[in-house]
Every structure is written in structure tokens, then in C-alpha cells.
Image 1: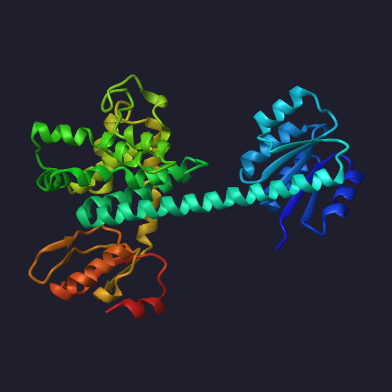
Image 2 (image 1 turned 180 degrees about the vertical axis):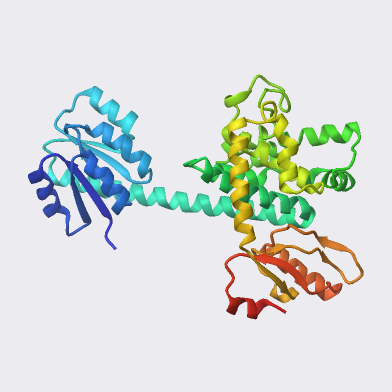
Length: 395
């Protein structure tokens, strides 16, 4: 498969010549002007390389490449211009993140070489992204699997926070949700460092000693320290560090940050974590929201609080449409939500109602069942399950 190249110029004859020259080596597209090119990037991209003229009406090459970078950050950008002054070159590099700067007339050999290097750079960018995403996703999955075994109830709340965070991000029309979702998954990571008895009482919402309260207060700092060991998660560690900071500036950490200076993702997580903590004590969703509402101007960003309430209302409607199933242990699937506790036949609780099942949990339960039998059947909620699937997994 040949790489896709986009040439942008305001002269049709120039574009025709470039297409004829490179159509055998690449899949070449051309656009008359920046506005047309931006639409093509959105509709027909991604392009491995984008080459733009500098002097174009309505939108010059620097303005276009800057906009193109926002839409398609992985595309490698080149500038082709007859105006080779120093300021143009500096602006092209600084504002348009231009990989190479070519002057007109550009000898064919030089253009061929520039395109080959740009394509190679695009391959490197994509390979690094795939490696990074795979490594990070694998690292986070490992951490979550460990939490699911050490602190299953907290793990269940963590998944609930992650899922609600996605809904809130959509409601707020946030463009980049990756940091928020990872921070939601890792927000309770440090809980596994607590002594087992403290963790049990904290999870149950019971009274804690002063020393234990100090441990709980510093959990965001411990989480930040743990997350910082994973490359490229610096922003995620900051979000987690501030996710218990009060909107009025009080709370941990004790510094001058307050209001909208606190990362927006941290402000979202503050609301979601406090709601889940109340629900863990037995409150339903409406009761938890009502409990926090009087404090929304002090503890929470009031605008975000309102968005969370709207997103949770929509989630309730979606859950109402989910299918209730009664399954055997071998019919339990990743994605099911427990609506009954999972216990051993002698009454020992393994996982509580409300937990979203993962593949690791299923494997753990199957292994446990071989040694100490688990009580069946199990009641779950399943979204998007058709009748044929129900017959396969229902008891």
C-alpha cells in the first residue's frame, strides 16, 4: 500500500505537475488552498505527508499547517515556498511544526529525497505511538489486575469512576479524554499500600484513627509517586495528585492552587470519587448527589458538578435498558455488572454487587471454584446481549 501524500497550493498547474511527478510512488491528493485542504484532511485522511505552499490567499501556509497539526498531528508537514526569508522559516518551524523547509524552484531530486525522509518520519511517529500506547495500556492493565485481586471493592468503584468519567467528558465535549480516563483508572492505585485492616475500614466507610486519616489524605501523593515511574504519564500523575483538592483551594495538597487553576480532569475526578465513596456507604445515586449539592461551590467546580449530574442521569437511563441475566460461573463474561454478591458456598464474600467483571476476575473465580466452590447462579446486568447470546450464557 503506497503512502498518502497531500499537496496544497493555490495554483492548479503546480498541483497537476506534482501529481504527475509522484503518482507512481505515492497515492497523491491535491487541494487548491488551505480551506479545501483542511476539509480533505478531515474527510480523506490520514495523510502521511502534507506539503504546503507559503503564499496563498485567505490562509497562508503557516496558518494552514498550524490548523493541520491540530487535526492530524501524526502527519509530517513540509513547507514549499519562493519566499525564503529567515522569519518565514522560523515561523514555519515554530508555529507549523514543519519537518522540512523547501524553496522554489525545488529540484526533483531534492523533492524526492524530502518526501522519502518525511514518509520515514511518519513511520517512526506511528511506530512510537503504537509502542507507547501498547506499553502504557499493558502497564495500566497489569496494575488494575493487581488491584482487582488486592482490593476488589475499590477496583469496582474505580471502573465505575472511569466509565462515568467518559460520560462526563462527552457531556463537556472534551477533545482529549485519554489523560482523564487513565487518571480515573489510577486514582485509587495507592489504596493497595494501606494496611489490610485500614483498607477494609476505609472501604466500608468506618471510623479511622488520626494516623489512618493522615494515610488516606496522602494517598494522592503516593499515587503520583507510583505513576511517575511510568514514562509519559507526567500529566496523569498531576491529575491524580490534585483530584482531592477542593475548588476553594483547601484540602490536599496544601498550596495556592484553587478554582480553575486546578486541572479540569482533577476537578471532574473530585466529584466522581466523592460520589462513589458515598455510594459505597449504601446511598443510591440520587441521595449521594443530594448530599454533595450544598457543597458544590466549596468542594467542587459548580459547572462540572452540574455536568456530572446530567451525565449520571443519562447513564441511569442506559442502565435501565440493560438485560438482567442469571448465569452460571462458566457463563460469567467480562463486561457483566454484578447485581448479586459472589460468595463461596460457605458464605465468604468474594466480590460485591456493583462490580464490573473483567477477564482477570473471571479467571480468578474459575481457579477459586476448583478449590472452594462458589455459589451459583449469579445475577448480572449485560448491555447489548441478544436472545441467542442469552441462551448460550444463561443457566
